[in-house]
Length: 303
Ligand code: CUA
Image 1: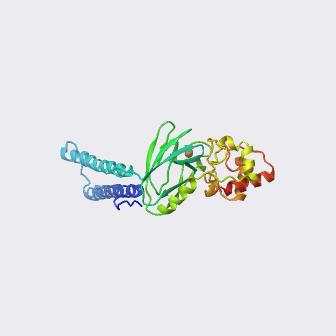
Image 2: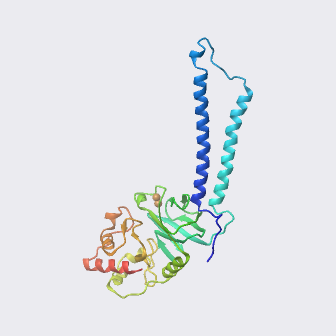
Image 3: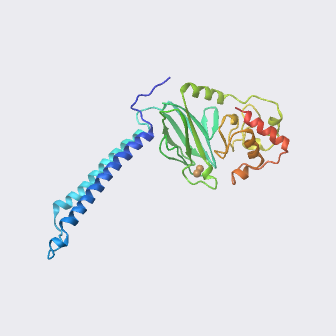
């Protein structure tokens, strides 16, 4: 197992440090300006010198140079710190252990790990720098998991890169951060950070094709328009417009976060996707109750 030195920080930590430094600088400026203001009000108040004339600072060259140079210097310092932070969160000097292809769709996410394609749920190993290669097939989306790193746009026709690095195992929630249509709000991301051993086990399970079952649910799936949009590896279904369903039963939610994933919710979703995600490309497929039962049970069984 690879281990990365302590100097590699999660991008969110680097951003947090920069925000703290800029915040302290801003606070010191605020305190200084307010103190000067209060002092001037007190020191030069009219009651002290009723006949006095207002102070002027014309032709005070030293003062003018000082209040031009000081902000320029402060901004230069912030600029240099920002450049350093940007380089750090982009992973400068540290090669990623793995690249994952991330594709935005209206309104779901596709994560490609070589042979395995997963929708909406990104798994990564803990303590390991990962690079996402981000793109979109339709409109502009934005990948954002606040605890793990900055936002990054997903643009059609081009690839952006985003470094992810998590110090703690667990589940991190994110959200599309660029308005992308009616179901923009239901474009949730879940990042599952696992130990390397768990991650390897998960990935090898996801890479396997689905076991052929020959059951009713599989027959219903293959006999209907489901196959036009969805792939289940190991069957004849090879559609690519919608999420790959080879291991949909292993995912926590349906419809990029709309519903928890269990047989009852899966059946409700299949019976009327537009009720739960109006505007989504998933149509209502007319099925008998018995076929809905079988199809829901089949999909949830695809672990
Ligand atoms: Cu995708 Cu907003």
